Amino acid sequence: MKFKFKMEFKKKIVLTFAIIGAGVLTSHAQTGIGTINPDNSAQLDISSTTRGLLLPRIELVRTTDEGPVKGPAKSLMVYNTVTINDVTPGFYYWEGTKWVKMATGSDSGTGQSLGLTIIENDYTVLPTDYAVVASKLRGDITVTLPDVLVNKGRVLVINQTNGTNTGGDDVTVKFNVPVVYSDAVSKNELIAPFYSATGGSLKITLQSDGTNWHVISSL
Image (tube, rainbow, N blue to C red; front, top):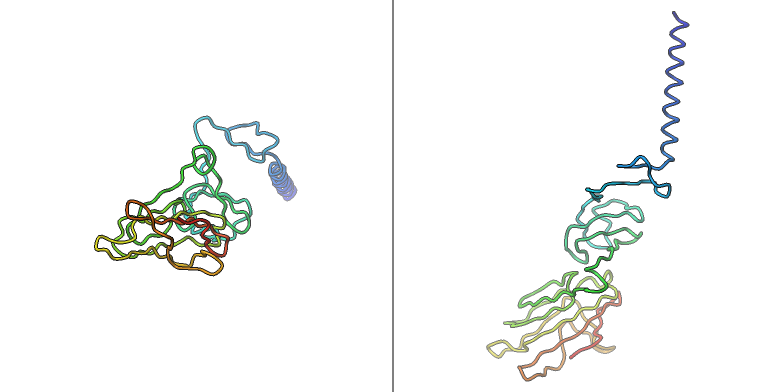
């Protein structure tokens, strides 16, 4: 009786190790989903003619914030669902220090669309904005510019179409941070000569160097 019990016990041990060994071998082979013949060049081969791959959808805060992911690995990919600070909906990957958006047809190349926003009141510039036009101002307004560090290289156009309101009072477009007009001039407001047959307008083009917003042209 004891001998039979020992034999059965040994068989179970051998079977257990055989299963573990098979699992180890499988872990080093390619994995196929929807196919029994995964490509040798792929660790994971997904095959389907009617379904796609759905990546995690999360709400990023800004490109330089890891959150809501904790300790993201380099090359980790997610789909961002919100527009806030310097992020917009789309696919992003973590490159080690920040989230980088993967370019699509609407982001670059032929047919690129640049955002134009017309405002009459205080406004915070969005990641999708290229030109912001302040029109029909009744009083001074403040335009909040994007974070200068995470927007290094970005170009913005700020245009003001009326220098006075209907009562004849001067109106000014102000900024939340100083912009550099020259080595000697930095101002928290839009300044430039007014001229035109329709009552005057002024426009500046800004570009971030990672430290300040610089005026690279003005009218």
